[in-house]
Length: 231
Image (cartoon, rainbow, N blue to C red; front, side, top):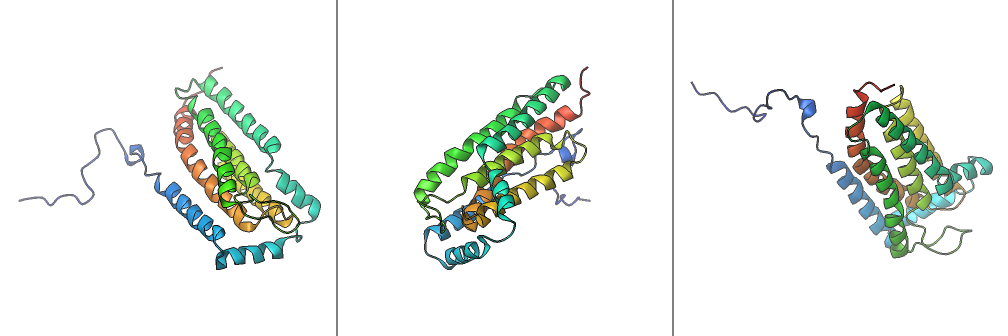
């Protein structure tokens, strides 16, 4: 009697489990990149989406939260604020991995630094290429995408990735990271520093960088967390 082939494919090699198989991580960055490309095309051209974006920006500008709070939230996207937070997370991670004797302790700091370095390398040329005009009350061009939003997204996002496997409440850490980045975006729009689409574009772009950086960070964190730290 012949046995029909297993539709699930050949069995895994002895000693491996489904969790050991490499996950397909690349579709998510591709999707975010495609959404960023579509949004950029809409902003470059005089489309209904761009006009909607400008109406939304006009409606949110000057609204709640109060001006001091909105300014504080927008300032969280400054390099002078976000980079020290990331540097502290990198230093703590390196110290923990050194104590644990992690084999790939260089991977998380390198991935975080690479993601952060990619922000100006991507954002500055895009600002020049798109050359979007300023919201009312601001001068010049080059507002798309938002550099403050991209800085906050990648700096706080990679810090959260580095610490996720080392804190007792990783979900609370992830929620705090999301709320901080939402606050940065809201503050920038309310204070009239950016259009909403400028912020959204940087969230998409930052999401791509975070997904790429998450792979080496999570692999190294998973290995080191199973070890007992050395005293």
